[in-house]
Image (cartoon, rainbow, N blue to C red; front, side, top):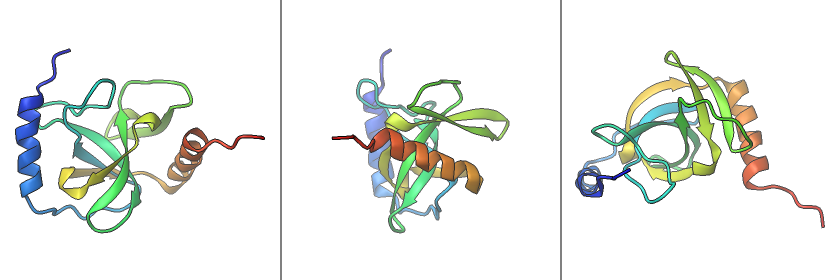
Length: 134
């Protein structure tokens, strides 16, 4: 698939110049401008290169750690179903966790319930930081 890096670069430049307005919290799901990325990295889609993301950790007012969501039902240790989000089943793609600036956040969609969020963070810890017996 051909990616439109030039159009994304212009949008990314515009995002960089704007002031960050999003007031976000952990467990919230937002439309996020993830962009056109290299290789198998998760892309945004549509005119603004957006994709839903779940806020995992808020480091300060400006930056956070997010996990992208997909509507494609996938199974395996790198996928975690988060339930129905605005009428569609959503799955967190654990292999695509990333650090972002709030300037990328476009619109809040929903807030994930505490129980599902806790189960997700356990799965992330197990997948990303496995304990190894020596």
